[in-house]
Image 1 (cartoon, helix red, strand yellow):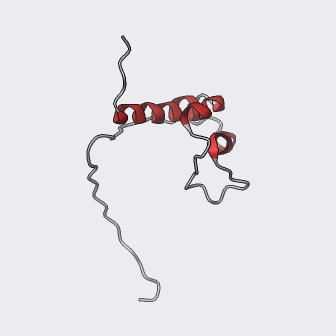
Image 2: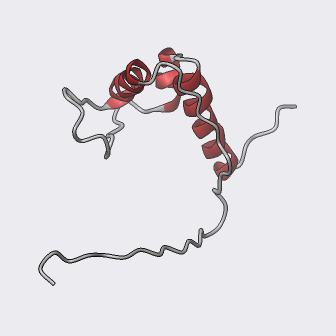
Image 3: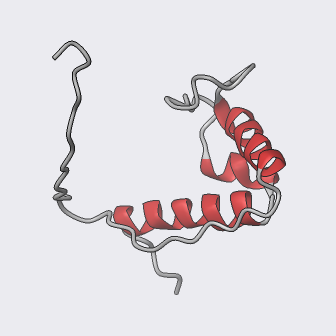
Length: 97
């Protein structure tokens, strides 16, 4: 019998696959296993010729790997269950003051 992953565990598996397979190993062919054809990347706005879907994200990873050929990403901690609490401390300098 195969265990069915819970939604949080499934999401963690997808993130691990992105980091380990795509970024670390350069396996861009796994993108369709992770991203829906209708996927819209809401980041990386400055990337030239940005596109959506699995190919769009694969192109982003390819660009990162070209710029950083020895990249080795490591997941330190993932949180997918319940609510995430975070504290943010920052200062802001207003040039007009």
